[in-house]
Amino acid sequence: MGTATHEVVECTRPTTLAALATASVTVPVLLDADLDGTVTNRAVVTPGLTGQPADATLDDVATDDVTVTGVADLGLVKELVTDPADVVAGQTITWRVAVTNHGPSTSRADATAPIVVVDELPADVRDATASGPGWACTTDDGTVTCERDSDLPVGPAPDLTVTATVRSSATGDLVNVATVQPGRTPQAAPGGGGGGAGGTGSEPDTDDATVTPGASADLALVKSVVTAPVAGATGVYRLQVTNLGPSDARDVVVTDTLPTGLTFGRLLDSSSGAWQCSGTTLVECELDGPLPSGALVHLDLEVVADASLTGDVVNTATVTSSTPDPSPADNTDSVSAELGTHADLSVVKTHSGEGRVGGTLTYHLAVSNAGPSAAADVTVLDQVPASLRVTGVRADDSVWRCVVGDLAADGTPVLCTTDSLAPGVTAPTIDIDVLVGAAAFPGVVNVVEVHSSTPGADGISLATDDDALELAALVDLRLTKTFDGDVLQVGSSGTYVLTVTNAGPTPDPGPVTVTDVLPAGLTFDTARGAACAADGQKVTCTLDGLDVGESLDIRLSVLVSSAAVGTVTNTASVTSAADDSDPENNTGSVTVPVHAKPLAVTGTEAGLLALLAVLLLLGGGAAVVLARRR
Image (cartoon, rainbow, N blue to C red; front, side, top):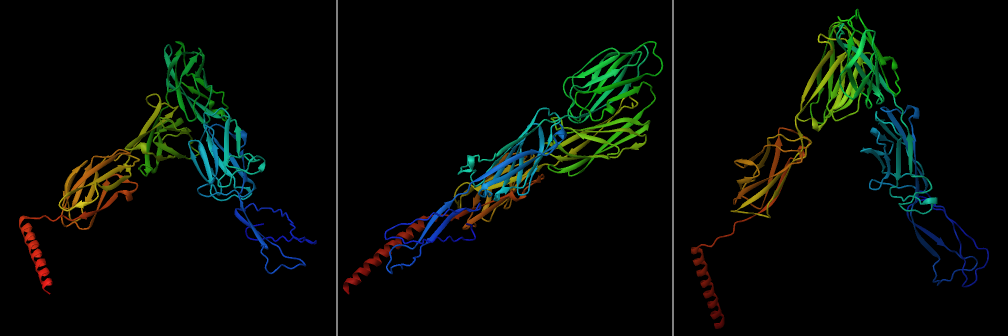
């Protein structure tokens, strides 16, 4: 039976039914999956050869109401879409979540009781997104929640696709667990029988997908001369190691095979990390801990030259790691101690776009080489401040190779490299798109560094530039106005309370101005909570500023004259020089009834009232006498 059509079942008894006898019929029915609510079944009996008496008292028609409650066995399957061989730390990963209603009923849902899929993401993924037709998905602190607010008939729902980025430091299993929760229709109990919200049904409503991410770290080594070796003295080589990702590199070792005539002296300097170097002519430097994706580090090794050393020397070094390297060709570099090549590198950093909190802007990095030599192994490092979220990097792929590291306390590293930059040439611009956060107010400075293995006039080719971004405050000032009391009394005073709040996201440096134009009949008396002054009916109050979440009350006392009649509506507003994200809530009003001044009784008025009372009494007595005479 369905909700739109009715099926008629007719049962015939071919034999006589004796007086006072009873016959029963059992009619089994199949309920539609979409059936819900109360079902009324009506049965009618008609006589055979014996007619019904005209005065029959028993009913020929009977009905029965049955309340139909649906149960639905929701099942969930979680699958890894990305080929397990392609799941690599630092790269994207995709899962599929399939929800199916295995019946027997339609699983009903609405906006107040939706069907919900909760996907608990592993800790080693970031930047997750989820989508699917008919689903509304949000992500909060590693948990993806998708809701469907429409009924799900028996059968599959549209698939959900969940995509995230595996953290570059991930090493262990990634276990992703998803669960489906019913909306209005209870989940079928085990075995598919009746149900309750706590049932699990015969199909699993929770599933997980586990994969162990691989790792791939494209290490590159550039070797340069800081100070050329001098016979009988020392020299300094710089070994620069970059990790172009996508994964963190583990067990990093730099091996420097010194040429004949040079021996290792000491580790003179290192930019970051704990390095341990040992050896005489075969020098091995081991990094204690992983080298993060997007990292750029260098080692300065001091060497001792034999007194008899003559001619140029060629020094070769190699970097290795236990993490697979997809491009090992750039792991080895050699440098000659020959002097005479110089590259004057420079970098100019500018920005374009909205210089406002919540806005987007683009930094433009222009790297130039004034020569006279080509600059080899040019590396650009922009440590974008943490208050600016990097949303994209655009550069000419034929010139630059760029990688973006993970956000840390000191910002997000953007690393770009090119093999060579000819003298007199400015390379194609590197554009870094960012989203300005509230923490950037009132301003932020972004610094870029450019390195090259070709020495400049001072020995190492290094150029820097910075771009200072000044930001206006972005606030949400709110004003509410109340009256301290119930009514205004003519001839008395009353107090209005003006509450000013800054909902952020940045402080308001001030001045914050509150303006209250008093209605006719009210004049300004005094104020507490702010410096206020009146110009006619206009009262202006000034605040020095408001922090995020700060509220301040201004108590404004007014005098009430007879010009105030009935009710008065008083409106005030708040403004400042800062950008206001919601000016609609900057005004507040309150309406208060006004009571007239009570009449005062003077001495003259009291005498007149007394004389009037006497005359009324005498007039009443005369009226009584006249009535009696009649």
